[in-house]
Image (cartoon, rainbow, N blue to C red; front, top):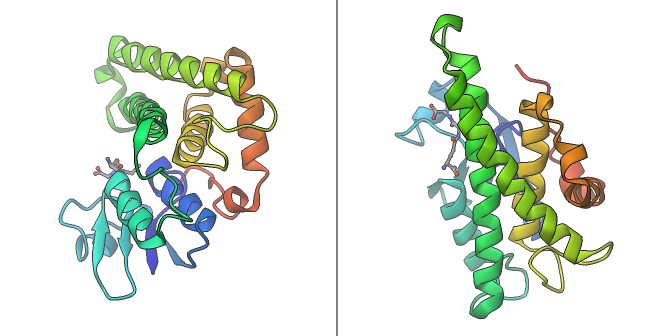
Length: 210
Ligand SMILES: N[C@@H](CCC(=O)N[C@@H](CS)C(=O)NCC(=O)O)C(=O)O
């Protein structure tokens, strides 16, 4: 299995951490999409990362679809989103909030990164940052309830809710440093520290911005 992308992308990182958590070995091809898009175009018509190539050559795209397929491949013992019931709904909702935080932090980040200075829309950045903070506040409440040993989705072991929330938090802290996120969401910050200390996360380090 080969994962193409880089770990500044929270979508790529959630897939890498999930593969590690499920004990699925993979090769990682580090690609910075705006530098070398041709490395991805041959596999993915959208030219986006993550792109995952399975052992049989099948190509998977879009992190949530990739993770859904991996859960199926891994089977019930190792899957990261419970198969059914209220536990599944809870994990999916928290993971969705994590993905929303990623998207909104990404949009705020891209506004400053891709537009000429005179065309940057500060109200649009503010709008996105407000949603980042609101999503993180929600995850902070979940982290508060989880306590020092528990998990965000109230599951027995780490689930996709935890992985996506922590990857979203660490991404937001990295690309929106001026927001003072760690101080605003101390329970989530402590929870993220706990998870980022695990090998499955440490194996997928966020690179310096290219
Ligand atoms: N919804 C997609 C988002 C993927 C995404 O936005 N990837 C970014 C890198 S963080 C990318 O490939 N951007 C290049 C582009 O869209 O042109 C997912 O979950 O996989």
